[in-house]
Image (cartoon, rainbow over all chains, first blue to last red; front, side, top):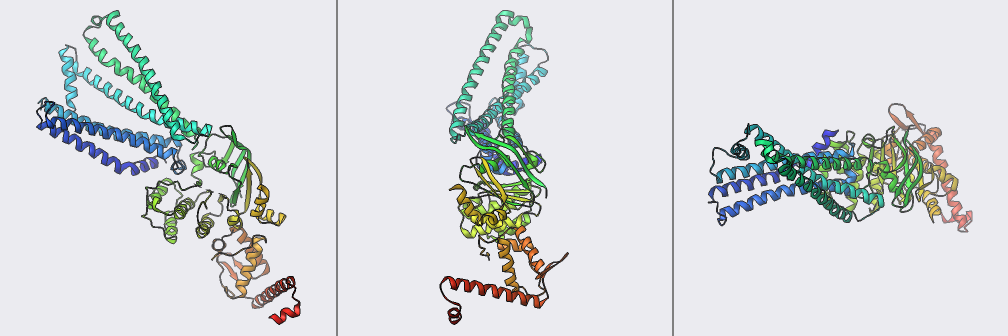
Length: 280
Length: 231
Length: 114
């Protein structure tokens, strides 16, 4: 049965997402063209256009995320929920199908986006032999080689993998924060028989945001004292030439930990509410 | 005749109000059962719990031998008290959706019935008249070969002719060993189609009896009994 | 066409009367196949179980017989139909007279009216 819900979800969102993806592709292509004709000065019209196109591309990606969350809200917490939740699948499958398809679509869009950026960059820097996303790789390899590190290539790959994971985890966390806000506020509305669902969602959203800020602040303080301790307690030199690597990686790793754990928690709670404590 | 639904000491609390208070209910197969009560008596809450829209109750429910969940949902076909389809989807989209999601959905019959009712398949749900939208919803709900059909207020704001059409769809589509639970205020209209009636008030079941029994015992129609009970 | 059923009398009795009069009036000729329980229940907008009961009653009277595989048929026994016709006529006449009595019209006056 699980397959059916994915099929339904992709049937219903497919067309719109195809349009969004091709729009991102078109805008990134335009930005590459503008880069090719610009002379890289910030007053140049082509350069300005390029910035605008990249901005629009990013905006469409954000909009895609918003559209998918709005869809989840419509599917589960408005009248349409009566149709969806009657389907013979576990309730959290609806959440899963939305999450996975959103992840796949956003992933594809982001790859297109960064490929476009990379190509623009290689054109701007006139490094034709390194093009596309490869630029990021070359830049980090250069950085490691310049710092005289051993095995720069392996470390570069590691760094990039961790960076990508960190980025994905943060994006997933933001997406799940919205999902979490929706399910929790719907639960509050059901439990206390509140009809102003949108108001409750708004307030829980603000509360969530503030909690998020508090946690992030706490962890940045911990991280700061940790790097202070690294710098002055042990000292960079003690770590030899590889200390540069550690400072490049520790922030992403901490991010993955914090964002990952909270994301998993929020997912578990949301799925649990959907399966066991639902009230629409 | 087997038991389709069995509720034991079922309760549900909304805020501070007891929407359902210690409900014990058994529905057997092959019956058409009416659920009656004033507004706010707990009819819709009971239905939402049976269909898994609310998952927050205390007590036990067994539907066709399983607890409320994805397996019971495969056996229960449910139409809520208002039209709940996305206004932007076409009737044919809905047909495809039901066909994809329910193994027991009979698309051929559904299409045939749509044709009989003169409803355009390519029309948008939002453009349909209220009566037609309601009809589409009942029709799709009834086009499954489910064990238990649950209709909540199927005659909300529809004209008498549409009402009759809906009753006929209802009666024609229930398989012999399946049951139909229908909640409505239009008692007189469904009275002759019912086997049993459940009267519910303030979250409690007043009685659950055969309609014929009530009529022969009181000498009054069910609608009159209702008026008597709740006046 | 909906059947205008009275909500006070037991429904199955009203259905029996209705089918009896349909047979007597020739809507269903002797030996004709009757609609299935479900079809007739949908047409009358009544419960299929009630319709089943009504058919059972008709079978008991003998106006209808069922063949296990092919469904229910109207009896070929013309004398039975004739008897039913007379019974129905008597019942209507009695009803008419009762009504006339209510209006304060005597039997003779009623006959004159006719």
